[in-house]
Image 1 (cartoon, rainbow, N blue to C red):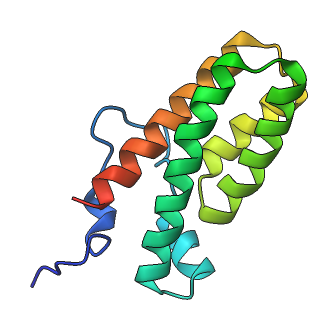
Image 2 (image 1 turned 90 degrees about the vertical axis):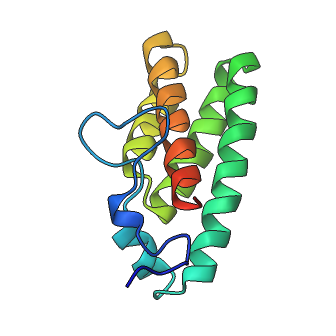
Length: 123
């Protein structure tokens, strides 16, 4: 019997526009552990994370190196807390090399994948 909860079938959903190369953009098992299985809290955290990612994506386009380091550091921590480990790993690399255009592009891709994945959970 299918559940009407937006996160109920999250293991079968993928992003609408992009797909991760080797792992899902979010480890939903980790997120469930972090929230002790509270689906409402998971949904709320993912909504806040999605908003943060959209804001960050816009800010990255205009940021200088110091601002990119700060943004990357923040994303690294938030990403790891919600289970966005691929994104957090790329953010960590950007924190160390804030002028590397290939890492900036990779982080932008990770942000798009995470946003798409989160949106797919709410369908």
